[in-house]
Length: 319
Image 1 (cartoon, rainbow, N blue to C red):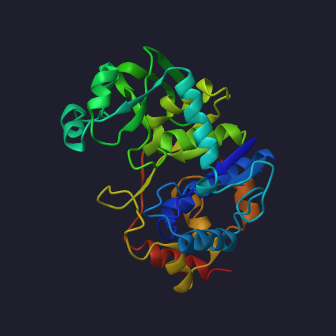
Image 2: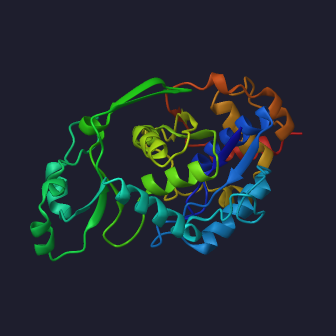
């Protein structure tokens, strides 16, 4: 087994990030596999080196150690996406040789109109620029983004939490962007290349990414890789149902640590509220690795109470 935790350094990590990291770490450690830390910083406008350094420091403090990563190296280095751009270029070239890549000149305003989804559905591009003639493309004045043309094919896979999944690529996904007009690589391309080239066999991540899995499986196969097994997990949400984010106060690991929370208390509380253990008490990492049962994960999101900080700090004082 080769699993990975792949955070974006766009802020200080919070309980939601650590929930995912803990699940990734538990799955790999319980199987005796290799745990990989990968920094996904292709969002150059928001990603900051200070957040990357803090992220590594916070994970080390929590005890969620890794076998390969930006600080430790490994056979699949580099483990930071901004250092992997030549690999994404090679993937783009492969798609171009296969005749699947085409320029898209659509404005943001047009995309918002034609791609507006119905409730519960994702936006689907109408393929307008795929049908442009070479003369029409030459007449365009703006720098294009680059889309990959998907076939009439249904991708089927079994998620380890949400079960059987099916997606008709043409009808439910549509041609999607692999490189933006500003030159930035799209998440779908970068994550597929990275998972494939790093030989990742198991992916654990939030259910918000479940809808993007089919296109990644298709891309992985297209680029000659074997897709990993996927486990999408319930999200941590507040009492109003909003997912925990880096914009909320009081729940970053750095803030909890400054308020006296221990690493063991943070991980123990997350394991308990996620139903991985039956008792709300302090656990060591070794106890969590032995006691947590990932098959207990449910499909419903996990509500984090307003007094979560106080509860973690109280738990930190237990002996």
